[in-house]
Amino acid sequence: MALKNFAFKLLNNDKYSRTGLIETHRGNINTPAFMPVGTQATVKACTIDDIKKTGSQIILSNTYHLMIRPGVDRIHRVGGLHEFMNCDLPILTDSGGFQVMSLSKLNKIDEEKGAIFNSHIDGKEFILSPEESIRIQLGLNSDILMIMDECPKKSNEYNKIKKSMNLSLNWAKRSKKAFGKNPHKALFGIIQGGLFNDLRILSLNELVKINFDGYAIGGLAVGETQKEMFNVLDNIKDHLPKDKPRYLMGVGTPSDILGAVKRGIDMFDCVLPTRSGRTGLAFTWEGRVNIRNNKYQKDDNPLDPSVKNLDLNKYSKNYLNHLCNTNEILGSMLLTLHNINFYQELMKAIRDNINNGTFDEFHDKYIDKL
Image 1 (cartoon, one colour):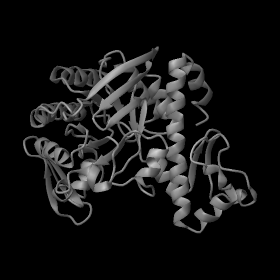
Image 2 (tube, helix red, strand yellow):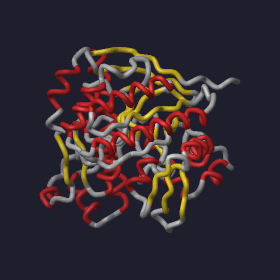
Image 3 (spheres, helix red, strand yellow):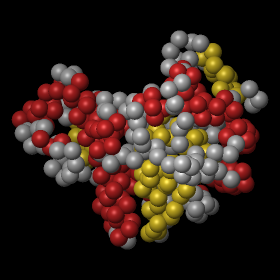
Image 4 (cartoon, one colour):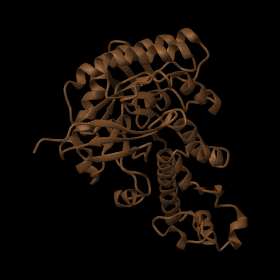
């Protein structure tokens, strides 16, 4: 039977915020959507079955980490990431560009060869070109692939950011050529340009000419303020194609997501809910809870009475405080699952309010609370 082609349908608009449906042969994704991060073919401290119970419809995995360990050949041998990690959800793989910038002990950018860098694990040298990044992602058999780009650190040097943006555009063309024709998969372009509005528009317009299946905003979540991030989105929101999904990479907090949805973004990913869960920080409808705080030793109430899913409220704050302060693995598991579940309940509430025409009120109620 032929595989279903990738497609995006816009369902509803409330000013700039919108709901949509991404169709893949592995299942549909309601947008705005949050993707839990499964960096090394696992969402830390959670099983795939648990992830699915939270309402998650897609996860993200990391090309850089999987290239280094266990290697694409080992994963490709069993059929790809889905078989390797026993996951029947759609999977998006990033290109590895961000990790080259943030993790490698030594890296050098060569326009023709790509990123030449040393592994943060053992120092072994790797060369990641646009063609190699696409080859790896196709070998992983993910459903949504990202172009290879250069993700520069935050900088006020215009010429430096412009040079990096032009390099990413060159690599975008090479990534598209290497991707070829794969109608049941998708390839997203990545808009760069730092905090410079004219560079962002230029990057977007050139990527639209190449014609990608979706458009991501990269180069954010690298130290800029929320106001600076929202300014970038305000600048490009009227220029983004309406018929393609829009993905804000590596973002973010619940308030980041609310503000970005208000500016037309459809897709998000971030390690925050899982990383926070492992360190004792919980996201709730009443705000953030540091469960390690001694005041919870006498609090026998559930973490968040408003949570509707997974019966997570059978565990008291008192008990969770004990688990986290004694570094019990169960504490990390329960808080991680709670946080992912909260993010998915937040996304559903966002979608419902957009469809009901009440998103502005919902945004204003929670933007400073979450």
